Structure formats: structure tokens, C-alpha cells
Length: 322
Length: 301
Image (cartoon, rainbow over the protein chains, first blue to last red):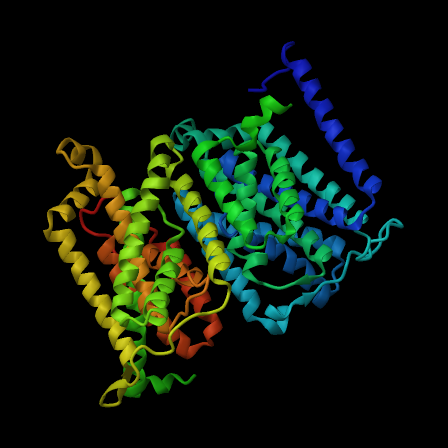
């Protein structure tokens, strides 16, 4: 464990910092150099799925929690910000926070109810809650426009930056900042003493509790923090996309499965692996756009292959590649 | 929308019967799911896709080949039994060899992958259009003020027969006893010479066959299309949570109960809210009685 910077670990830390620096530089510099609107929109998808996958991993890989209503939680953040803007005139910038907080509140209620139960019940319960959220949205067309689709305003310009819908580059950088902050926050959390508690609970809850740690409280903390991040990304998604409808593909099980696959392929308990999995999976699916339903067949096959043959996911390959 | 209408025996009893027909299907699905969980410890998320395959089999056999409906249902049962056994051997057994602590979650996610694959393969093979039979036997049975179409009488009848046959099989045959022994104590069963690998395959096959039969029987209500399984799977999970995971009699009672609740709530609220009501019911059960409504005396934890 990374307890103290022993002489042996310092060069390793420096090497990691250099790697992260290079990657970050690439992510900042490449899109404007390419200057292609289509590619920028693909990169936005890649980054979004990468960060969502990492949030899933933050729950699954570190505390052993599985949110199977993940897409419904994204919908909470998305609709909170969109409806807040539409009905109450809340600025989308504030909406990022509103979406996050509302989603965290849903996470808190869900967590309080389920986290005393075994992991499987959490998965099933969150699934039902996610579906309830989605169906409630589609059943209240007077307020949410339901399946008719809700038109969402773009972010207003800020500090002279043009956030009109056509300017994908601005949206890309905004996501880079949001996603970067979320990744750093999660990274610091799992490195801290709290993160050690998460891992201990995942490894052996009974032993952890016998050491005097309140396992349920730590799990709740993990779940609520993760929900907050999901909500923020959801709110961003609403204003980026411009139109929301509660279809299963958008906010139902298929979307959850996509995020889940990114997290599994990235490697559970790696956090950063999901970003690479996002690049691989989403980049791949954009490249083979004509694939149609084969795309999801491939997702399923990959998911099963990872579980059966490569439980560490892409992270298992890391030592060969970099 | 008027509660007073329920006092009218024609409407009240009619709704109850409709609810029982639905409930019989939920019970079949739930029993299959519970059997697979109770014996293999696998939460089968692809259960709805087994339902979907059953629906396609009956369309193929009874519509395109023109064979009697009941032959189509039987074919669905046989095809799904073989398919289920094959899945167990091909995917679940290899996972069991290597999975340890994360078995429950890993096997769950594996069946999620399977769900996605089967849904989209169906989309590729058959396209998105709905294929079905409007009615299997026309006409309706009417006793006094109550009428029930012959289709639904048939569904109810076959569901009861299948449940009885399963019960007899598990209780009386030696294979059934071997399966029960495997569920109770796999190691002990193995020392007594029971091939537990085979029992796992048979149990998964039976569970799959029940889902397939449900899918075939309900073809006049749910037509065959790639994602038709999404609603039944939600319902069958609701049933096993209500009845208690792995509790087979509990699944039957919970299935019928859920069917009744839905029939009456569908009458009182608009149909879009029905699934919300079901989901809320499950959430409430998970809050107040996470072990299910019926905790059997002496049941395994």
C-alpha cells in the first residue's frame, strides 16, 4: 500500500505523474489539432463513458457495491437540471450542482434502505428504483414531456466562451474539466484512509466490522458520493445533448449495461482503467457505426469474456503495454 | 375508474380471473428463476430472453409450420430445456471453476452479458417486428356474469398442469430427489454418488424450460419481438423477491398475488403506472421483509 514515499516508490510515483501528464496533454491538444466536429463528439462520448465507468468502478471495485439502476440515476441528474432550468429558471451552470445534489439525495435514500442488505439485493433494488425513476418520468408528460422528448437549453456563455450547441470543442473542454475534477476527487478518496476502509469492507466486511469500523456508514458514503458524481455528469449530458426522452436505450438497462461493461473491461478496482476501456469500446463502436445490433452483441461477448477469462480486464494488460 | 364498480360481481370476479392468468405466468417464470437460484446460486438476468425464445419457437412451430398450438408450447419447453442445459455447461460451469468470493455478482453480470447478446441476436435474425397470434382459440367461456376467453382458460390450465408436473417430478422421481439433495448439500450429494454437475445442468434446463413455456403460452398477449423479455423478467424478479429468493412455493403464491395486484391496480390507475406500482411494492418488501413475504419454517437461510 502507498503508506509513505519510500525511496523505492518515489521514482515510480514520478513516472506515473509523467504518464498522466502526457495523457492529459494529449487530451487537451489533440481535439483542436484534429478540428473535426464529428471526432470531437466521439471524444465527448468516450470521455463521458470513461468517467461514468470510473464512477461505477469507484462503487464496485472499491466498496463492492453494484448500482444496477445507474442509468436511472443519470436520468435524475439530467432531468433535475433540465426541468430546473425550464420551470424555475435555474441556470444550467447551477444545474450541474442541482443535478448532483438531487442524485445524491436519491442515492442517500436508496443507500439507507438497501445497504444493510447483501450485495445482490442492492443490485436488484437499485434496478427497480432505476426503472421506477424512468417510468415515472415517462408517465408525467405534463411536467417532463415524457416520451415526447424534453428540449433542453444549452449552457449559457460564460467568461466569453461560446457554449452554443454547435461548439462541441467548448463542451469537450467543459467535460474534461468536470471529468478531471471527478477523477481526481475519486482518486484522492480511494488513496485516503477512507479508501482503505472501502477496500477492507470489500475484502471482508465481517472482519472490518470487528475492527470497529462502521461498514454500513462507509458504504453509504461511497454510494452517496458516487451518486453525486453521476448526477453532475447527467446534468452535463442533458445540456450537451439538447433533448431528453426516457427510453430504455437512454436511461434504462441497456445504458447501465454499457457503463457496467466499460467498468468491467477497464478492470475492477483500477479507476483509471475505465478511461481506456471507454476509449476502446466507444471509439470502436463509433468506428463501426454500421454495426447496428452487432455492437451490443459485442458488448455482451466482451463482458462475458472478461468475467470468464480476464477478471482484471484491461488493467491485466497494463504491464505489457506501458 | 370507479371503485364502486368493483362491487359488481361480473367486473370484480372478471378482474380476479384476469389477475390469476397473469399471475400464473409470473409464477411459472418466478419458479424457474427461483429453481435456478436455489440450486445453482445463479441470479439469471437472462430469464426474460428465455421467455423471448419460447415466444419465437411457438410462432415458428404453430404459425409457420401450422402445427397445433400445444405442440408449439411443448417444443418451446424442449428447446429451452436443451438450451438452458447447454448454457449451464458452456458458461456457468467454467465460471464456477474459477470464481470464488464474487460468484454471486460475477454470475449475475455474466447473465447480463447473455441477455444483451440474445436480445440483439434476435434483432439480427428476426428483425424488430412483432410476430404473434391474435387468438389461439376464438370464443370465450362464460359462467353467469363472468366471461373469460378460451385463450386464457388454456393458459391457466397449462400453467397449472406444468406446475403440478414439476412438483411431482421434484417430489417423487429419483432425479428430482437428487436435485433436491444437490440444493441442500452439494458436497454430501457428491459423496453419495450424485453427479452434481449433471444436476446443475438439469436444474438450469428446467428453469429455462419453464420460462420458455411461459413465453409460448402468452403469445396471444405478448407477441414475439427481441426485447419482449424485459417486462416479464422485471415481474419475475418481483415475484422471487416477494416470495423469497430460492423459495419455490413462495414464488407460486407471490406470482398469483402480483397478478391480482396488477389486475386491480390497472383497473384503478392508468396502465402506465402499473409497472411503477409493481416496483414500489418490491421496494417496500425489500425495506420491511427482505427475506420475502413467506419465510418458511426451517428453511435454509
